[in-house]
Structure formats: structure tokens, C-alpha cells
Length: 382
Image 1 (spheres, one colour):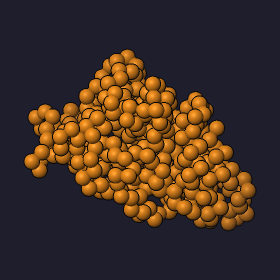
Image 2 (cartoon, helix red, strand yellow):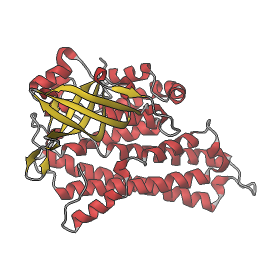
Image 3 (tube, rainbow, N blue to C red):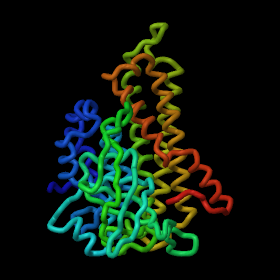
Image 4 (cartoon, rainbow, N blue to C red):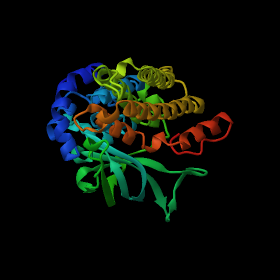
């Protein structure tokens, strides 16, 4: 096991990532050797408690790592984001954590936020569902899913009107993987479909995330879904920033229809400045919102609905900014954007794929507005 500080991960891992890019693209999944390098250097341990070999990174540190990895390759950054579920060690009881990390194990997770169902059966649950677009499942040791606990065919309640929704940890051998990932953008994520039909999950591998974590330390005191949700936005920002940089590098050597270098045209100068400024501003807004939640956790304060709305609003804003920047740079690069050997082509399809995530839906802006007007957000895990 190689110990690397999270802040150093992108620089240390860059040679491994670049060597694997072509194979990841052709296989529509990350090569095994790259996944092992990610695991060995601690890329999947950033949210894992210290007693289980993790670094307990803050939300702001996580987002910075995801964004810098995405400037190298979006699929790698996305897989690392989707695999950082080590905070389960803080949520599960000691028996559950021991099952996952006992004997020095360093599990790699994949997860899906789409809900499945679970039925209590003695000291276990039977979990069923069909989860689509499960990034990194081909190399995961464990699958973490959200499931609603049913009782008598209806959702069981933990309080009046509040359904019992839990995280369940399934073994890789308990699920069926269907190879459905036939796409252009984010090809290297291997985001196949996963099915389970009555998989038996012991109670100690089922965690509620709406109650205080067992380990009362800063990263785990905040609203737990906030440790996960904005990661996809950090990836999109990293891709958009890299695409602007690519076009800046391309512009001096590319000529326009009139023979003028693209870099010398007012149109290019204005578009580049606008895109770069917009993306940097969106980054700062996201990090400010994440920083406020981080500070609340460090001070033992509540992650209020307003703080969570700030984060969601920053995510939605960043998604709109990134989409505009990607389209603007793709257009500015002209025919160069069409060729697969040009990084602009890959950035565009990867970035646009990242922006299709449900966390970037326009519905999220509407939910933020409802909160500002004194109503409930009306979205799960808000």
C-alpha cells in the first residue's frame, strides 16, 4: 500500500493515467493495471476513516482532487469519485466495518443512487433492484445501493411520513452485471447495468444516513449525501477548464478562413476570456459552498437546509457554465474538434456526458428556489 497525500494524487497518478488512456477508450472501461495503481496510491481511500487506512479528507479537498484528475481524464476522475464510499466505515457499526476492512482489506466500491427495494428477513435484508449506469462496477469489490425498506408491500416508516431508506453493501458476487455501456462520452467509466434479486445483506452492512454517524469527526458530521453529490460537478469543471486550456494552446497555430491565426482574432480572444472567467468563477462558488459545509462539520454545527441549497445552487450554476464553455470552445476550435487525436474532441464528449448526470438537472435549480421561498425542496437527498 503506497501512502500518498490526497493533494499529491493527481500529479503522482498522471503518468499511470496517460499510459492507460487509449486502452480505456477501446475497452470502454479502465484497465486493471490502472485501477490497481489508483487503489495502491489511495485514490479510493479519501473518505475512509483513519482507523481503516483512510485519510478522512474534507469535502473541499475531495473536490479539488476530482477536478484536477478530470483535467487529465474525465473517466478516471469519475470512477474515483464514484468509488469513494469509505465513509461507510463511519456509518456502519463496528461489526459491519470489520467485515469490509478487517484484516487490512482495502475494498473498492461502486455505487448507484437510484433506489432499489429491501425486505427485512431476520437479521438480514433481501435487496432487489435494477441499477443503471453504475460506474466502475467492473473492478469493484462491493456495490453500495440505496434501497427503500418495504413492509407489507409498502415503504416502512422511521417517522411519520418518512420512509426507511438505507444504504446496503452488496458483494460483487451477489449481483449480475449487464454490459450495456455502449457510448461515446466517458467511455472509460465502464458504467454498466447491475441487477440483484433478493440478495441477502446482513443487518450490519445496512446503514442509515439520516442519523448521526458512529464516528463523530468533521467529515462525517455534515449532511452525508453532500460528501458525494458535488463530485460530479467538480469533474465537469475540471473538463471545462482543460478544454479552455486546450483551445488556448491550439489557437496560435490554427488559421481562420482569412488566413489570420485564430489567436489574433477578437472573436477568439473574447470567447476564451469569457469561458475561462466563467469556469473559474463557478469553481470558486462551488468551493465556497463546500467550504461552508466543511466548516460546519469542523465546528459541530448543523448542515442547514440553506447551506445545502447553497451547494445545490452552485452545482447547478456550474453545470450551466460548463455547458456553455464546452460548446463555445468546441465551436471556436472549428474542424479540429472533429478529430479523435485532438483532446478537444474527447473533452467535449466527456464533459457533455458528465453534465447529463441527474445532479445537474434543471430541476435542482427549482428545488433551490423553493427553499429560498420557505418551502421544502421536493427532491430526495437535498
